[in-house]
Image 1 (tube, helix red, strand yellow):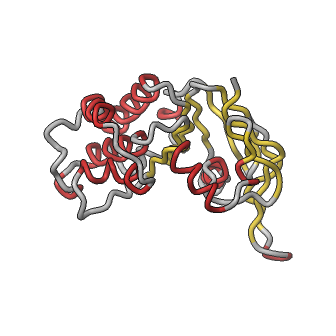
Image 2: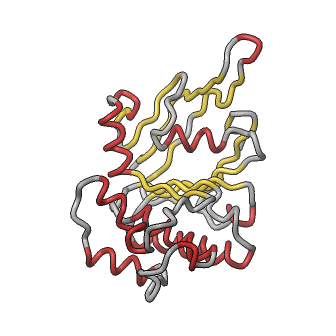
Image 3: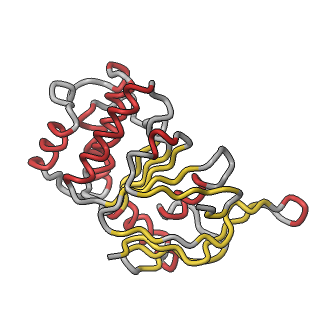
Length: 221
């Protein structure tokens, strides 16, 4: 079953002499349960593509279909709800709120969506990601690897069908990076989710089921 599909996706910034084509005629398909890595050099368009897939930045042309729905045909408030419920984001810089505890950071997306937290599922996430005895800690009291585990748990708390990760190991050392990727892959398999990871590190990409290479805003391999 195809979960994510783009059709002639394009994104431009600026006008005339300052026109920049960030993406051009991108056509990809991702199956349910797949773990896909998108690789490319800095400026290749991979992060722009991820933002289009996540409903964060409207394309200039083309379509993004998630579970056969054209997400950019939705109104802004509908798209915001769709993002919260269908897509979990993991960022390079963790983006944890410093004054909130681990538990509060993880549960925040569910609370923002005015949904009751599934406490059994939450506890399972904590165990799966090795965050026992850390629930009352602040982000500043955690290592980089622990903070990224919290970010992964936060991305999964609403039980999204899709997880999008933008350079999730970019701020971590090589050993911690390997550990985080193994943890992310295990979590996605356990909860039957589909994942797309952006990375410039081929070693990280090799954890994926399939690799898509982007260059100059186009799929080249």
